[in-house]
Structures are given as structure tokens and as C-alpha cells.
Figure (cartoon, rainbow, N blue to C red):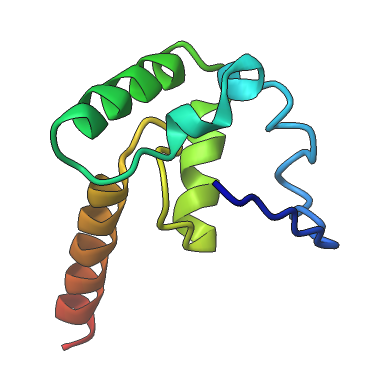
Length: 101
């Protein structure tokens, strides 16, 4: 497996302390756990295991909000799988469309 490191000059918004990721329950876990390949079979077990880590995380809500706001579509963030976040985004978009119509 090839891995690349991408460095960015990301500055978090003032309402999100830059160290929230360091305080996450996932900080001491293998990052691969949160990025399963696929969404069937063994990947489902991996997703559930990642969600269990999220379930005991003190910054789960911040993590979830970050993933939704920043459009991170890969992996488990804030206790939600890729599919769950996509569903949330679609529902929010439909609701906005109804409210503007």
C-alpha cells in the first residue's frame, strides 16, 4: 500500500480549538480502522468497531460537525459512516430546497 503525506496550512475556525483531534479517542488507534474499504462484509465489522471508539470519544460531536462542514466523505467521523453522512447531507439539501420553494 502506498501512503502519501499531504501537509496543509489549515487554520481551524475560532470556535474549534486546533487540538480537538488530539483529544479524540481515536488518537491512540490505528487510523486504518476508520477508513474501511467498502461497506459490506468485513468492512461492516470494521465500521462498527470504529463507531465503538467514537462512542467513547469526548470530541465526537466536534468531529462529526467538522466532517459535515468540510465535506470529508471518506471514513468514519464522529460516529457516522460515509453512507450515514451522505444521507444526512441529502436530507439537509432536500429540506433547504423545500424551504426555498
